[in-house]
Image (tube, rainbow, N blue to C red):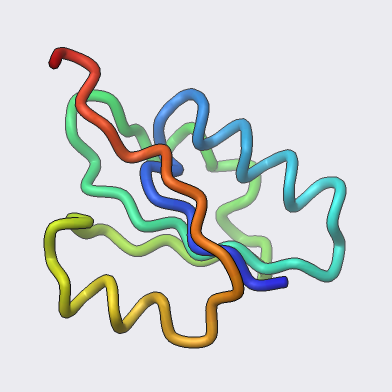
Length: 85
């Protein structure tokens, strides 16, 4: 399965990404994250070189970008959020 994870550089999202890559060896993950105050790419340093993982810096409000990264994706898991609202 090919997953698009939004907000995957945050605390919960990064743990989910690691879990998927660890427990589902045939799955791939595309992580779309805007990297605001809550997102930190260092949260995923341990999987950054995994060929099944791809990071895309961007905003889920950018419809064109979302369409591009969602090509061929089987499922979307959304963790993108503003924690201060």
